[in-house]
Image 1 (cartoon, rainbow, N blue to C red):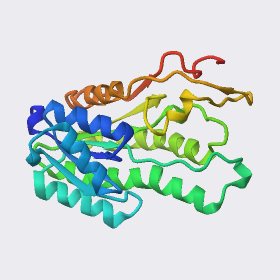
Image 2 (cartoon, helix red, strand yellow):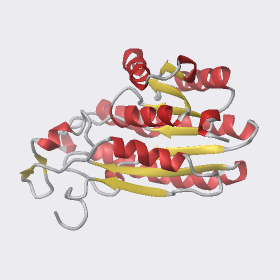
Image 3 (cartoon, rainbow, N blue to C red):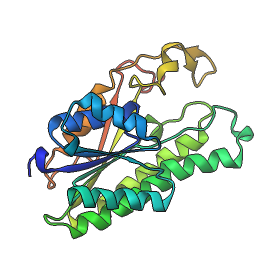
Length: 252
């Protein structure tokens, strides 16, 4: 099956990493369903891609709500007939305050979007992918460098991203019998609105403030596209793509 015959869903597609991946997939020939909380940014991404409108669909979605996720996958099936790739990307962070000052509502919101939302989308993808012909597909989860190491004052985000690794492994195992592959991409310091403060200085583990190197977010788009375009008998289980000189490997 060529890229022009394949269908992808990208969550959190209106900005940042999701936008870069949606653009990369549209330009490669995929039919793409762009999901996000606001319709306007999704439609702006489609316009920027400059593709035929029949190949792209903007679906306002809140991944933390089962009904909204169900509607997303039903519209995908109704419009395109199948699903070949799900990029589980939607995510949020809590305010960077000391752990003991976090509210329950702040904790719960991050868990609902980053973990429960990813599970709901994965579950819906399973149901569609196992029943379609040709059977199967690929799920790619956005894990983040925070799936390996925390930043200061990031307990909710870091906890959910560590949990994503467990979900990725379970999905990879449980998907085998349905020809569903699952892998994870862990991204460090791509230039997005979320990462913009790093260019001005962010807290480090030793309490200092330091400017951190960044990389072009388009590298993330091409990396996810590489993972997506593999045949289903091959899988990138985990990929880390990061700014080469960011303070992650070693001790700074």
